[in-house]
Picture 1 (cartoon, rainbow, N blue to C red):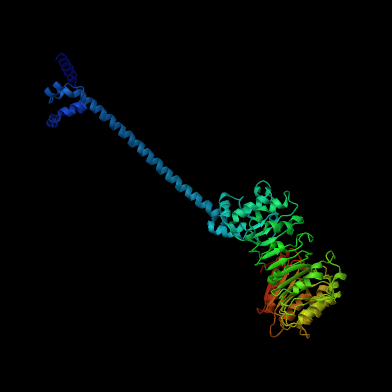
Picture 2 (cartoon, rainbow, N blue to C red; picture 1 turned 135 degrees about the vertical axis):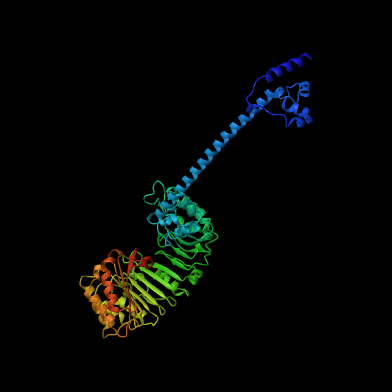
Length: 565
């Protein structure tokens, strides 16, 4: 009882404190509700108030005034916290608005920078991958001298990811490549050796057919090690060019390692192998799809099955031709193009070893003779090709009687419609050869650098008399091409202009195309001349100046033709 009284006295003393009206709490409205739930409220909100005091002085305002003050202070603290949170929220909202404005500014900057970017960087990934396909040339050339898919991976991360996902650009594998010039530090792919190059390319090319240049024995690693990744993928090889003088590239090694053969092989080039290394072609069998082959100067045997399927053959004039390949060429029923390269140094043949017989090319449609020597025909060796449509005699050592005899023997057939011949010496040679080719529709004259000064004018003058004069040669001529490495030798030339005017004056108009092949560096100098020639023909003949670049004068397929205007 004493304790209750003491607490009551203390409560009365606290109630005597005068509070401001704003901090006083009016219990008149909630008194009935408090009375109904007094026990629970007391235990929950006023645990320190005695039960007797609660029950006896429930309706008194002053009894619980101190507790009301605590509640008011708590509410005021909560309100201050709410104001602080509201201010913080406004600060965050202001920061977000600033970030939105900054992002908008960055978008504007990105748009301005994007408009100044190179067009190739604006392409989508699909189109960029298509562009990458044109960065790799199809013909077999060393990667260190031209575009390489490995170089695409050093530009940026986006290019690298796109290049790695495009298997087409990795299907051309040059295992002979060294580090490209200017990429000694970044061209890591080429510093790891031929086996690493092959492994990387084979992985990125996935399952596509392959074009492969095998390594040379001059590489720092052994040829067997360098070719080991390639041998496991023989079934994917479509084109194969072997470059080696190492005996391991012969039959004994490749035959043991590539037992499955080359089922997809279409083109085989062994011309850059040592002639005494590749003894026969049995190592590539079975090769049911093989259609084109370039042979070394020496080959002792060729499968009969192979000769039945070949359509294109290129070989040197050596023991293969003189002693063996005459029968081989005769026994090729599907042969369409035959290219024979004559060695004017006599390294691969002796004239006394050649039989006096003809090479029967009964089915060939294209015959090309490179570096032709007149002594070959003097030895009694000649061609019989009754169905040839295209005859090319490139870089003859002389336009002699034997060359004209060859053109006569082949040109007498009505099938010859394309004639390409080099003009070297003797201006009388070119016109006199034309009388044997009445059915030629396309004439291509290769003006050699060795043509003596002054004789080039006689060539075109005599050609004008032969074609457009009274002789009436080449009645079916429709396309005339004049090609030279030295544009000053033919353009401008008064004799050439006379030839053009004679051709333009023919009635009815006969010529449909007149083309000049000159070095691309000299093309701009003759734009006005071409315009005058075109005006001379009055629209009846197409006049074009083309860039004919002879990278290798012996191989006809190396010519790049680009129409300049």
